[in-house]
Image 1 (cartoon, rainbow, N blue to C red):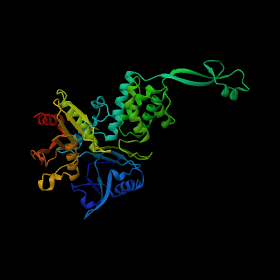
Image 2 (spheres, helix red, strand yellow):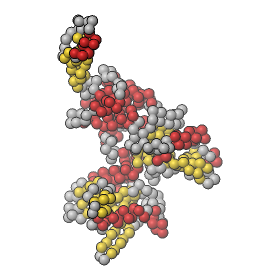
Image 3 (cartoon, rainbow, N blue to C red):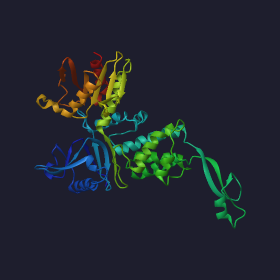
Length: 429
């Protein structure tokens, strides 16, 4: 089986035939629905549960449903069923959403901008896991062009000639009756280093699990370059031997991704087992990183300092406890401060319901204003259909000439450059 179901954040999955054509739900055959439910329940009691990403609940008249949360990526189950969760981005088709999501991933440190621009990255024909495999292939192509690492490695052999150093204890054990032999150790300049072993193991594994003919063909071609390299026999041991320094920096990204593929690690705290894999990303972190990177770019010609996850203030000073971590702190050249916080949440255009803004978020903004001694606080939300024409929304508090002003700004992640230009104009007034 190689069935793929694509859902967006917070969409609900049902197996009720009466809702098969209802656009409010995604439909899954009962057998697959039950297997997905079992997959979620099996993780109960573990340190990290699948229920952190998928929620089972009941809905009146519909019955049992499974709802995606705010993690985006791919879950692959042991029966071959794939659940692909995409971000909830307004105005976009599934393929456009995938393209925007991949563009957003560029802002994370585990990704290299250069590997996103290949024309062979066909998002319409690949699920997210295959896209990540394809990106690994592209990065490895760059490595092969640069040259695969070789290093001096200790080789041990029982030969009839002497070379290097006699390994005495092993020599006595093996050659008591063979005086013509020497058990020796010597250095050879080989490609069989831990980094290359792990890459070869990754390629061999991806060759087995990939369902893309294009990816499999590329993997076979790359394996030719690793003919003289043995696959890793102990992943943990070989990863512990990997040292990234000035001379091996170009291996860093590949090692991170090899760990993801070989050990079923993810970019969440969830790790799959040998039969199931989850490659999931928290959308709050992606949105925060995406906005911060593009805002910094939009302000780069100004003499302003842009700090991410600032660590300068605490809620209490004696003792210094409860650190405040605003997403973005901008300090203008005149010393004035602007605090911006990103929230990956869809608001509603109802003032009487506070537009859907949580009270806790506003308490947080008030604390930022007081501790950073600034009246300029911005809350950045993704734009949606309901809020696209909402206008200027702000909340003001004045106490004894002490003003706090919290303003909302809506970011179009599909047109991020345009959004950041508009935000720059607002900040530069």
